[in-house]
Every structure is written in structure tokens, then in C-alpha cells.
Image (tube, rainbow, N blue to C red; front, side):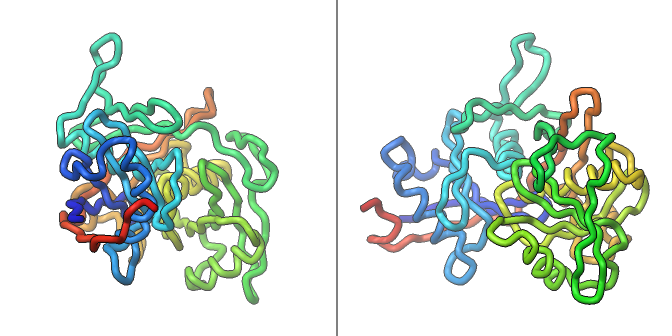
Length: 303
């Protein structure tokens, strides 16, 4: 079976988008049973393309998300931003009831989710309220005692555990200076055994700009990491409640140069509405490449 796809990313978190209009064999409800194995094979880093997950997009903007392990999830903020970029480029735009606002509307297992079109390739997505990943309490701008001190080798690291669709440990700016990200992630996960968590290191450039580094990928890892970083810095008085998180694997100063991110897919603006206590991200998915993957006969078939 030949499957044309687009590899896309947001904040370096990659997804394979499969437009079902181009793969009739995967279209229709009876074909959904093939999605887990197709995702597992195609997202594999050794013999596949390599990605955090697959996005299966139907002609009517019905959308399904499957992780690289072949597990379906009913929500993926990162995948929605990638799909919004493709849907916009494909002309799949709807209008609200007043007919004054352009939207991208997706039908998911959680129901309809809309992304507002901010610009040619900028979309806003509501993430809801943030919670403490430790206590489950709602985090507000007045939340105190968010950070805890965790020993990483001979270093005391300050970090906050935040839940925004996924669990994120945001490391306080400067407290892990000089520590390797892999070493830090391993040590921090040791304090959250049995729970999948994402690690994000934060550095403030200005009150409106943060540079962040993440240790791993997940279905909503970039959206959650950016929001958690802004929450940590805002509550600590290091940034404004509306700030831009720039994803980088390089020196922080180099990451904010426009030439380093020509399509703005490596940054997410985070808006924290303090009256509603609601988080919104603004960003776009970026195209990495287009290709075709061949799954040999007998693989990816439903039993």
C-alpha cells in the first residue's frame, strides 16, 4: 500500500499528515482499524519516517490522532496546529454564525474543535485552564509555591509540575545552568516514576520572549511545554502573562533571529487570560517534506 504524506512539525515536534482523499484505501470507518499499525510502522525511527504520531484527515475535516506507538488519542494540540496549516492551504475554511470570522473546524472524538485564523499562517487554539500536576489544583496568576527544589546530582534544581493536557516539568530559568538536558530529564523523571512527563528548560530573553528546550515528544508536547514555561515565568515575575516561547536546540540568542525560523513554526505565542484563567496558543505547523511511504502487502492489515 502506497501512502502519500506530509511531514510537518510545530516546535520541532513532528507529525505525519495523511490526507485521506489521496488514500482511498484508508478512507471510511471500516479502515480505521488499519490506523494503529500504519502509524506504528510509518512513525518508526529505524525503518519508518520518524514522527511523534500520525494525523488522518478526512475530506470533511474529520480528524483522528494516533501516536507513534499506534495508540489513538482524542486530542492533540500540536497535531491540530499542523492540521490547521494544511487545512488552510487546502481551502477548508468555515465561518462562524455571524459570518465575520474565519475558522478551521475539525471533528474529533472529543467533538468539534475550532481554531481561529489570525493571519495567513497563524492560528489560535484554546488550551483551557492549567492545573498542578502534583495536586490537581487549578493554577492561577496568584498561585504561590509552584516551584519545588529537586536534587539533580550535586545541583539543586527549581522546577514546577504543570498539567495542560499533558504533564510538564518546567525548569526554573538559571537553576539548571550547565546541566545536560538528557541528564536533567533522567533525574527529574526519577521523581515521577510511572508517569509520562515532558521536561522543558526555560530561559528568559525579555519579558515577552522565552527560549525553551524540550527533552522529548508527545501528542501535545510543544503546546503544553510553551504554556507551562510562560506560566512558570509569569507567576515568578520573570515574564508577562502573554509571551512568545521559541523552541531551540542552539544558543538562546541565535534562536530568536528571524532567519532561524522563516515560517514561524518554531515559536508559539501563549496568551493567559487571567479573568477567565484560560490559556490560548497562537502558532502554525511547518512543512518539513512531502513523500510516499510503501507498506508491504500483509503489513498494516486488520486481523
